[in-house]
Amino acid sequence: MERKTFYRLLLVVVLILTLIYTLGLMGVVPFEASYYITLFMLMLFIYLRLDAKARGE
Image 1 (cartoon, rainbow, N blue to C red):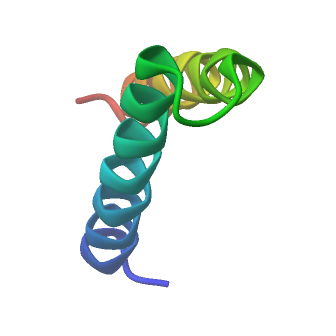
Image 2 (tube, helix red, strand yellow):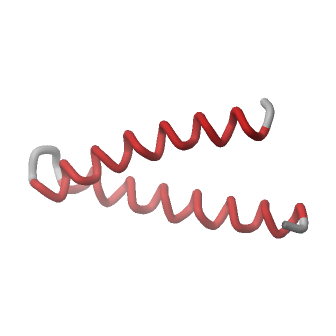
């Protein structure tokens, strides 16, 4: 998959997860969902930083 397409898809996923995270903080969905979304976003951030450093950006 082309990098630009991957980042666009990733943006949509992150926006949806942010909405679910917010609903979890408000109590609409169980807070455990917000917890796991936080862990996923942290791991995603670390992966993207390491990937950028590996490519020399």
